Image (cartoon, rainbow, N blue to C red; front, side, top):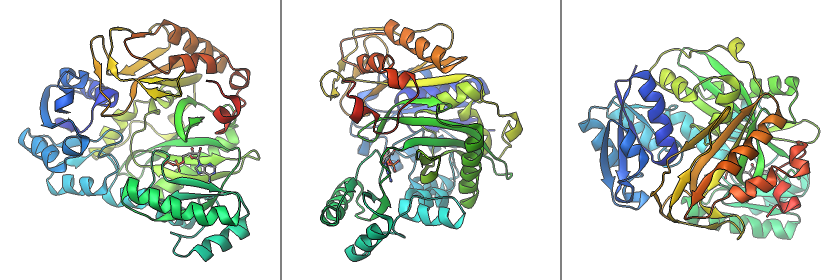
Length: 447
Ligand code: ADP
């Protein structure tokens, strides 16, 4: 097992990783930008070092600075969390060449899954159903038009390097498609430095269902059931739950097997998520694989009782997972609400500032993963998420009522948050009935 690891991240996920490391007797090294010297992860880690100025590029994304701190402090592993370096194959490569274990999959697995057009081809070969669309990147608009004619409109043009819901365009006609391709290419070039785009059938009211997997280097690949992440705003998740109200055990099994096949196709090790779209007829299609721990991992932890960070550490250290497929049982219901420093009553406008009062909720079945505290200053430089409230109940109804109670209790002053949005959503009849898909917030106009 690792003796000391560097956590190449900040905020709630850095705190989350430190907690498991403490329980496992692993020492932790935090890094922080100049804007983050008072951050909670800095206070909780065994050691903390400034990695650079405020800008992410010069701090949390600065490979040389991060590697220098890791080697000087004698770390034997680096946990990238999510975002920043988490899906950077070059970084994983650099870690290996410096003799520090990257706590994640191999550079090759990151690369294959990170190029979404390539990932689609790999999945097709592995027998995993993919959304019908182009083979590889669109080189020629005529091929895109031909494919669209074959699969039928509407279609969606997506950036192969895409992430965070950026670089996607829907087209309903041939004219729109021509425009969508050139606009998506421009957007992708600006956002990701890679203009490559591909085309998929646009499913009109799908659910976003993803399967959590964990894998070790001894050939064990285990799936931990699904999360339903259909409640999205501009393709960004706001609420996640496990299990999904739409999934029957038989479909869970099928999706679980497909996710395991996806992981095996790239010799995947550690924790990962295979994202699918599910249509009304229970057909599911591979969308992408995220080769990292995800924001919404705690809902899976609640219903399975498995600490996913611990499994990541075990697998990265070359040990066996602590669980087998037959140990995984889905118990009760878990929901997560992402609390962002945004004014949900004013079009989710960012709301940075100092938190003047902070009293998080608690009690039976309530977990708060956050790096916020009273007096903490939310800067506009990084992610706007300030806390995740996760609840567990015996049933979905109990989980919804518990979340409503928890969020009503949550006191955050000095900044605006998305709590008012969540409270309204939790009282929406269709949501309570489990009747929703990725279009939910466009149709229901909660705020
Ligand atoms: P990103 O990596 O940017 O998050 P994804 O490929 O994961 O992009 O897609 C994000 C969201 O966009 C999905 O959860 C879904 O709501 C929507 N989406 C993506 N592809 C399709 C599609 N083919 N049909 C319908 N919706 C889609």
